[in-house]
Length: 312
Image (cartoon, rainbow, N blue to C red; front, side, top):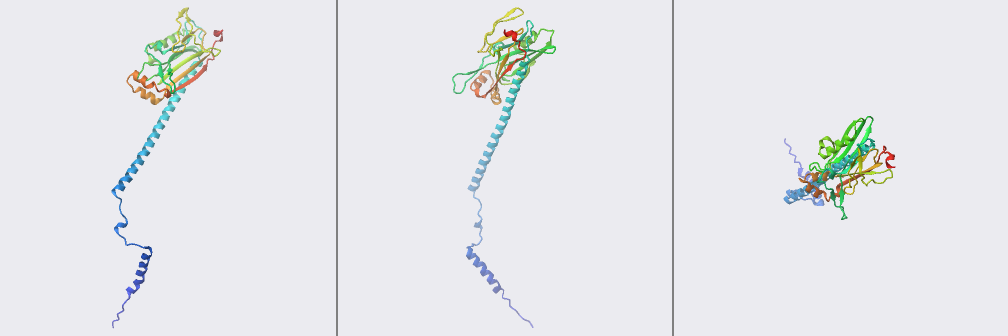
């Protein structure tokens, strides 16, 4: 005997369908279609790419300028440190200055670069807010000192004739025993400068456009009268001031009581730009309005070994 039972499945599903329909009506749900999630248009993509490109370029520009400023600051720090070290070296050499008390020997002398270079002209630079130019002067000077059983001669000079290494500063060093006349040390330095024997001297730095040495007496008065000098009973010609700076030889027991040094150094980027010009005339023309790119250092050095009787 077969019994057939009919399950009322539809009647069981009906409440669920009715409930889903009620929820859709309550929240206003719409049937899912392909228009519910549209893609970006070409114009929108181009706008986004353009904005991203501008942002990336701005970030790169900021990064590049920051990196350039960082490198420039490092280079500038190197220039300032090198200039200070050079000033300290010259000051240390001057403190050892000693009168020789030997006939014919030169204890200290200062001359303008025009003495050995007929083409030398001071580098003039315009000053902001002023019609008067500033003259950057170059002097070369020599000093004699004594250490134990030997004479030591030291000199400083800037080569203004070089257009590739612009305004290089050189240091001369020589020594001899006490039995020898120390005049030979001065003569070696003078001949090396006159014949441009720069390879026989130490290269300290480039870009030195201003170097002067002023001598002062025991009362702190600037010695600028440039008197005639006797050496071995032979009269040296009186050295006239050059460009407002005194030039002189000091012999016998005469040395200054103090020396004031002035050193003017170009900034590194300005120096590199000036060196890129092929001729001296173009370099001078470029530097004529770069007075703000010259760092000036000044120091007055007392001479411990001054002979006070030389000023009586």
